[in-house]
Amino acid sequence: MKATEYLLDSAGVRALDERLARAGLLELAMEHAGNAVAQAVQQSFPVGRVLLLAGGGANGGDAYVAARLLHAWGREIELLALPVRHPLTRLGRARLKAVGIQAVPLTPASLRRALRASAAQDRPSVVVDGLLGTGFTPPVRPALAELIEVLNAARLPVVAIDLPSGLEAGTATLPQPCVQAAVTVTFGGAKPALIYGPAAHVAGAVQVAGLGVPSGWIAERALAERPSDAALAARLPLRFPDAHKGTAGTVWIVGGHPGTVGAPVLSGLGALRAGAGLVTLHTQEAGVPALAVQQAPELMARLHRSLQDLDDTVRRGGKKPDALALGMGLGPDAARWARMALAWEVPTVVDADALQPGLAGAGHEAVVWTPHPGEAARLLECATPDVTRDPISAARRLQHLLGGVVVLKGGPTTIADAAGVYVARGGHPGMASAGMGDTLSGVIAALLGQGLSALDAALCGVRLHARAGELAGQQHGYGLSATDVSASLGAAWLSLTSE
Image (cartoon, rainbow, N blue to C red):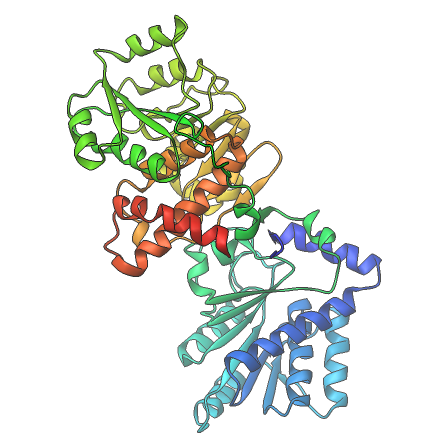
């Protein structure tokens, strides 16, 4: 089973480095890092000249190690370096000199000369970026900014060490200037800037390399976890041969008003395809039942004069569902209906119109809140860019405000409960279309109805939905609809559990 991966920000890296230093393992970790960079160059760019750029800090030390190893393996190399600041970088420079390679002072002029020499080679060349690492905070100094601009203008492939120089490890912001990398080799765990856009757009293919230290050392400094597909597949519900619709979970979808009749239907389709035994749509909008029958006759629908009637029935002792999803097209009175339904204390997914300010304290442990960044900003009373700049912090703040489990949708989606933060894998760019969130709410509700905890339903539901998008995207590309994703949920389930 593939191990769980972790995310580290600059504070986590700094704490890990301090522990490595206390244990006398910092030099060993740098050797591991430099070896991983050299291996990445060999695998992705196996022929041609290698130009390495070394900063004065620890990132530059990794570049010195990579240069020494690539030279030992027979590669033609040149290393341009800024003045050394870090003791291990100084050691790396001495060891490189001992095998016959002298570092050249790095200036805009020397970089232009080296890039021209690389471009003139008959064989392709590659540049290793070891200028700035996880300790960097923007803005880039003018002298370094000029170096980055010269490098980008050369349009040679770049392998970045830990981060493309110019990125800030813990945020999704894309500053300028910033190195445009083809490959980024990062250590211990991915950095938020490498997986959240737009910062991730310049990272290229990201490889996470180990440091030769116990995984627990990294886990205790981690900002978030990335569960593997195998770990999530093990949490999906299993059925005995005598299962029937009554034991597979009853799910209610509450929503729909004029102009949004499709939203609760999409949620219902998601719930059906994610294994719910019985799915009923409860709505005040007359168009919902007809559309439900048209899309899937297996969906049941109940038309109410007012959702207050539904609440009265439940409060008089009427049967409750195993799980509930509400908010999809629920309309202008959504906040009141959300409070009403949350008081039933059944496992609940709160989405769309129901995500209104003032719900703090209204939920319970079995609630999954599923905002997109705009809805999250409304709940947190901040600007949307504040959410997208640092989704991990935003998800954590939302969880503290609302309780339960928060699913902050995005690329990737971020999940938070009281104990920690998790970052989802996968998905497809074609999923950037209307109705995807409605479908996801139905998927999570179906898993809640089948007995999963709020956290497991959120983690598994997000990955199942993303995997369905990947499979549907192979057929439809960017022309991907929410119903395409629903149709692929069964195949996604099989895909995850058969790996």
